[in-house]
Image 1 (cartoon, helix red, strand yellow):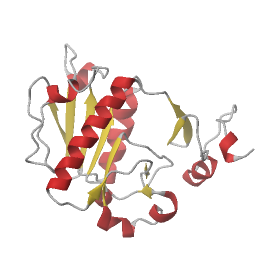
Image 2 (cartoon, helix red, strand yellow):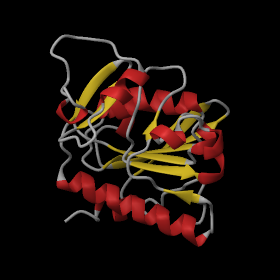
Image 3 (cartoon, one colour):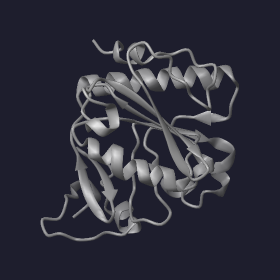
Image 4 (cartoon, helix red, strand yellow):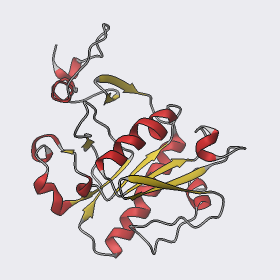
Length: 211
């Protein structure tokens, strides 16, 4: 079976990250991630999900370009927690170019594992919201990624994450010591980003970016 024909095995199997990289199809018809050794086929995102992702990527790009920071947003880079057999494709991944020389997998696999390489990661919440609020949150925190946003435009997350009654929320997770401190922004709250302190963006502007 060629890589372009690869499919998720019908029998359960735990994969290492190296096996996952080897298994990944070159021209996939679906998107896959590795979660604790399990290959997960990601559902096709909605149009609103992609609009939110594109809007946030554009706003972040404008800001780091304005500040002349050595950052860029890749299209298909993988985030691998160093101590786990996992690999994620974040919705928006901001990379610090100077630190990539310290990433052993970057040149051959476009994979990063160091928090110093990732100033910011953004996940736009889908129906699999537990992945964003539980697994990825914990892994990004453990990796030492300075800032993580969880954009829950459809208020899909649990009430303990976005309050009761639930409403669309942008959660900004700032690494303080070795733990994330989470601040939620709703309605016309101005989003406070530690790495972009002069960012002029409200939660409502993000939510209004969809058709």
